[in-house]
Each structure stands twice: as structure tokens, then as C-alpha cells.
Image (cartoon, rainbow, N blue to C red):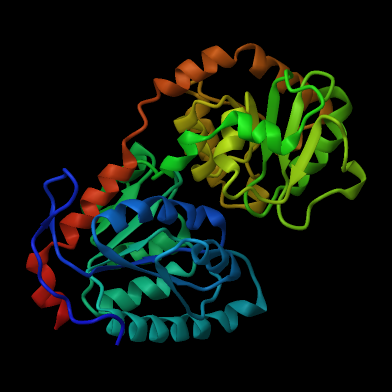
Length: 386
């Protein structure tokens, strides 16, 4: 049995006026990519302040690696299958893996007896949500993209609330479960030290503006290739920091005076953001909202519909219409186009930053925490523990 029985205690959380319990428990889930994990990580410091015992149920190496680096969170691994929209022989075996994951989730949730479950989506979330519903645990989903992903579409009927990053998406959720909250952003991203990043990279000319290129936790092969081909055009005017994804380092470019490549940025990411003047990024919702929150002008290169359900194209189009980002489709990206777009973006960076600040991004962290607290109130304990 994990932890003891829930001991009742009246406590005011620091200045919020929210009354809670000792040993409140929450299950977080979501996985497959870092995009399904980082919003959960953004919630964790505030959940700790409110006295939650935090458990994370995941199914893959990505979420395990990221969550185990966060102190005070217990990680549980379950079996899961991928939800595919295309033919694969694994489509015949993965339903059994998902069923096994449901059974494992049910066992974990029976032991933990959480007050509430929060799912960020991804295929690992489905068995956890089903297990939580079978134990009558309140369930909150979060959908980052303009269009609702397959895992969240399956999970939505079992949920109490579906939080959305985009305001139009909330209206599309059936039974009025949709609530516009925005995407939770890690607060520490806004507190970077540009000088620390300069010391880390040791650029030969520290006065040149800095271009940050990032392709997500998995990297972006097409973007990586074009960026590296464009280096002769870019390096005379920019220092380039390239987050290229695991296994995507190019040893032949090591030591270039104005080019630095990293597979992944962890603790140093806030400093890198503080140093950057402009960015190139995929259009995953988490990356888009982080850039908006930071007011960092960026060129978005959405994942094409041939490699996705088209969610990044929708995300990018939504904010391009509001003048917050410059966007280029992957099939149109060449070294010359990249150089031209970045030069233009840098020249108009003040205008872009102003429009990004006026975009009206929701105070998502506080909104989501309030929803979690509402569904984990002490009055629900008797029902949840039976």
C-alpha cells in the first residue's frame, strides 16, 4: 500500500485560500513524446505547494527519463499500444497491450487511491483514463492542439473536463466538457540567464544575434538538414544554437566558431531562450505557446500532413493569421528561403514580439490548477476511497 491512509487536515495553501488535505494524491499521465510530458512537469511545482503526493503513469522511455529527473514524483510503467491511423500488423496485437495496460493502471490506481487524474494525451493516457474511470476517480484531460488527438477523442467520454489550449477547440468538445485554459508553461523558462548561456557556448563573437533552431524532443531531420546547408549563409550574421534531437549530432560540424549543436537542452534551456533573438521551430503546441509566452519571434516549420494528422499546420495557421509567427511549409523550405525568412524575422523582431505579447494567452497554469482543485475537494473523499 503506497503511503498511509489519508489523514484529514485543514490547511490554507500559500495565499490562495484553497483548503486542502494532507496526502492528497494525483495521477498524471501522458506520453509518446516530450510534448505530452512537459505540460505535466509545468504543473508539478504548484501541485507540490498544494500538498499533493504525485504519481506519474507512463509507458515509454521518453516519459520515464523526463519524470525520473523530477524530484518527488513516483513513476509507474505500464504496457501500452500505439493508436495508428494507418495499416500495420501491430494493430492486431496492440489492443491486447492496451488491455493489459488498463489492468495494470487499475491495479496501480487501486493501490494509490488518487483524488484526481490528469491526462495530457498520447496513447499511454487511454488505459490510465479507463482505469481511473473504473475506480470512479475524477478525470481531467488536456488537449494542446487545435484539433483533438485520437487518444483524447477516445478518452473524452470517460472524462469530467477537457481543457484546451485553443479557445475554438473547447466549443467542439461534446457535452460541454470543454474548457479553454491554454497550455501550462514551466515558470522557470521565463527566468533564464543569457550570460550563462554565452559562457556555456563560448561564441567567438558574442555580439552577433543568436538564432535558436529546435525540432522537438525527437529532432526534425528535414529542418536539421536545411539548417546545416544554410550555415554558410547564416553564420556571417548569426550565432546558431541547434537543438537537433537525440542521435542527430553532426561530428563534422563540431568546433565551428558560430555554431553549437546539442541533442537536447534540459536545465540550460531557460538560459538558451534568454540568449536567443529569433528561433526556428516545429509547430507543436507546447513549442508554440512557450515561444509566445517568452515573446521570442520565430519561423515555424509545421510537420506536414503526410507525417501527421495536420495538427501542426492548424496550430501554425491559427497564430500566423494573428501576425505572431512567420510560417513556411516543410516542402518549401530551402537554405535560401530559410536565410531570407530569418533575416526578415530578425529585422521585424520588435513588431513580432509586440504582437505575441498582445495575443492574450491565458494564465493556463492557474486555470488548470483551479480545475484540479475543484475536482479533488475533500468532500469527494468518501466516494473516491470506497
